[in-house]
Image (cartoon, rainbow, N blue to C red; front, side, top):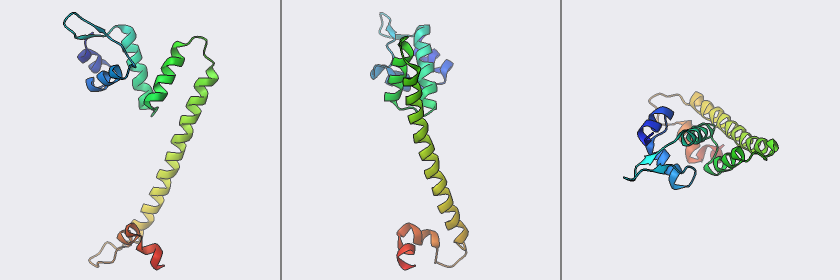
Length: 133
């Protein structure tokens, strides 16, 4: 299978597939003319990486997960610890986004949105609202 076929099949850009090869996450075969040739195992690895990346795992986490996947003597606790750590990071991001949402919602609600120049949104962004209160 060539890179275009794999890209279409998995929904991964060819550039991403080439990047994964460049950093050593996959090692497709090369034909005599230098073209990449992907076998079923490569497609499986790429699907694994695509799913892990879609869940927000870093490249290094993916490298670790891939190594754990191929290590039949692995402890599932190692995988769970990695996933729990990542989940904690996601929860922290969700918290930060909720705080941003609350702050911006309050600012939008306090702005008259009329023809006057005073605007609590701009005051807050400039830092003036907290120093003037």
